[in-house]
Each structure stands twice: as structure tokens, then as C-alpha cells.
Length: 371
Image 1 (cartoon, rainbow, N blue to C red):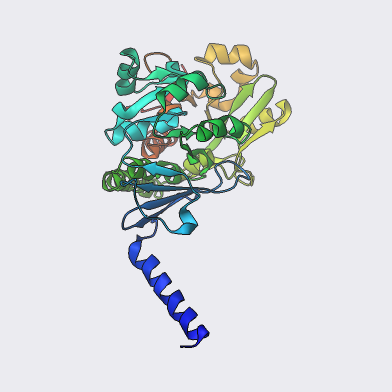
Image 2: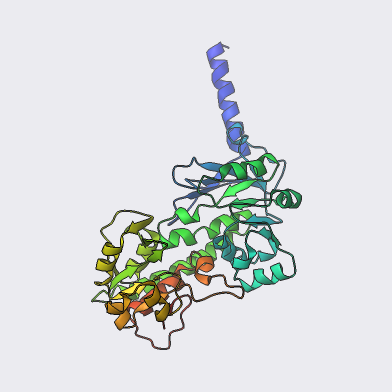
């Protein structure tokens, strides 16, 4: 047998062995989310997190129910996570709704800044010390986390604190980056429940929950398509000496557009927030029919103290100022910050009833009119 023929047979047998040991079953089927990808194999899964923060590299994780899973050489270097998780630490309130919706809130063992948690189920776990306080998002209690040694530490990162998280990975705690906040569409953020479904071996349930959210969101959006005379919307307020408003291609503006509103900076191309000077903000505000989220004010009197020109604005005169920061949990956490990513259908419904108040008895989920 020639050497060339021998090498060809060897290559064929090796390739066949690799394919038969780990046949691919299903590629990820994301519909809206662009920052994660799940690939299911017969005895393990591969989760890729794409751009966890702006400019970051991709992060890849291998998940399996079996510690002795035979992995191809190409996957050996990636962090291995045994599923279903028996416990988890998350670092953002936006991670919490998926745990409650999937029925695994009792798997949460620690959280930073627990006073901001609004979920009744998780608040109860905090009150009976089943969920421990581990500092703040930027200053996690290293000693406490190393003692807990969770199956996974789910991190929210801007990239500046990556070194802090790397120390946990070096000590045997898998750090999984959650990039839900990088998604620029409402349903893209909600689709991150599929990542939690994978971690807790509840993929079918996660898919079902997400499909129901999409169905509700789409039904509301189809009703809105029939509306005319779109109101002009200004969103944002002053923090310190700067005005901050969402960019024209941001997640917040996607919701406004889907709800039938015309955002006053809709031609802008930024996906994040923008700074505006006093004069420009005032000019835009005078043209708006509705003003959303004017800052951390609780009533129109406080608004006047912040902005003495507010009484001259059309939205102020017509009582068309709405904010999401008044709907709070038992310890003061704003419900919108915790639940809105997971329930864009609720946000869309609220905005629709603000823009087109056809039902005077509608019960808002997040927004309240500034009294």
C-alpha cells in the first residue's frame, strides 16, 4: 500500500470517528438575538457569546450533562459547564426574570446590591438568607464568591472590569458573559431566556415562553400598524448638567417606533445614548406631544424645580409626561429595570396606551403619568 493511500485512509477513518462520536443535531435557531449562538450536539452543547461588550472577543462555552463527555480537540480549550446547573450567581437585575419564569429562582445563591431586587420570589429568598449579598456589581466580594463556588457566575461587563472576573475563572468558577444589553431590538433581548434554558436544561420551556412573548408582541404591533397621526415623542432627562436621550437606532427607540410613536431624533444613527446641550434639548421638547422618562422626578412640581421652563412645554400643559421610575418593588427597586428586557410585550402595551389612550381602564405594567 502506498504511503499516500495509507494517509488518505487514516484521515478518512479519523474524520469518521470524530463525526460519529459527536454528530451535530441542531444549529442555533435565534430569531432576533444576535449576541449569542447555541449549537446542540448529541451529548453536549456549544454556547458562543458574541461581543459581550463593544469590541470584545467572542466567548465560547461547552455544556454537557456528563463530566466525561468526549470532546473534539477544537473544543478542549473552552470552559466546560456541567448542566443542569445546581446553583448560579448573576450580576444584573435583568438576569432575574428568566430564573423566575423558568421556575429555577431557588438556584440563585448570591446577588450584588440585593436592595434593588423587586421580584417577590427572589425577595423572599433574600429575606431568609438563601440569596447572599456579595457587594456591588463593580466591587464583588471575592472571598464570599470563592467560598460559595457557584456552578456559574453570570457577568455583565463593559470590558473595564474583565480582570476582576478573570480571577474567578482562574479559581475554578466559570464566568459566563451575558450580553442581553447589547441587543438593539426588544425581542432580541427577551430571547436571552434561551441561554438560561440551556443552562438549566429547560430549553423546551424557554422556547415556549419566548414564543408566547413574540406572539403577544406581534399582536399588539399589528394593532398599532392600523393607527394614524403618530405622536411626536421626546425621551430623556437631565442628569447632572447633561441631557441624555436615546440614539435613533437604539433599543428604546425601536420600542417607540413599534408602539406607533415618532421619535424626535429618529434620523439619528447612534445605538446608545446621546448627550444634548440645554438649548437643543429645549428646542426638541417644545415640538414633542409626549415626554417620556424626564429623569428621577416623582411629580410635576419636582419637574418644575428641575426645569423652570417645563410649564411652557406642550406635553406639560396637556399632562402627557410619563415615567417608568415610579413603579417599584418592596425595597425601592424600579420594576422596569428588572423586568422590561424580559417582557417587551408589556412595555409595548404600555407605550401603545400612552400614545393612543383608547382604554381608560388600562392597567399599566411599568409607566405612570406624572401627576
